[in-house]
Image 1 (cartoon, rainbow, N blue to C red):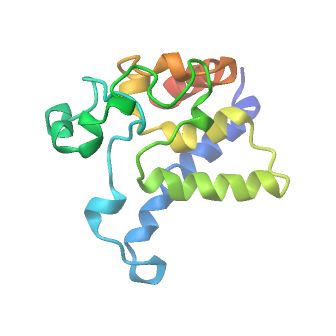
Image 2 (cartoon, helix red, strand yellow; image 1 turned 90 degrees about the vertical axis):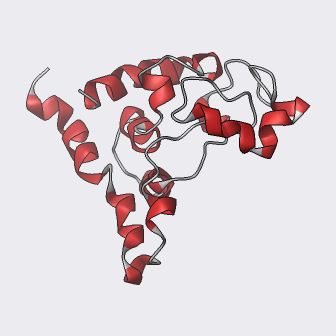
Length: 150
């Protein structure tokens, strides 16, 4: 595949960290710790041990909630990551931008719209955790995310 067939991947690379502008006063001036979250992870199911700083998850009230203590938690296996609540970070800002773009006729492929919110979901793309929640489209898009992260 030539460079022009993957133009969207290059464009995705340009926009993938735009959420960092939330640090600037004119865009909300949010504290560093709320914006530059390096790892995202699903909420509503058991916290996988591959999540960074997993030992601190024991302090989260959800850790001891019986509803969330199972592999699937509140989700059905294969439900698709778009149906999973992911912890908030700068990726969400960019994902909202991509949804606006999609709703207004963007030609970015679904793989680009997958990379934007999930590029910091390290337990998924580095460790293979939470794959049971993915649908077929997620599986295909994960291949592009791994190319993106190289």
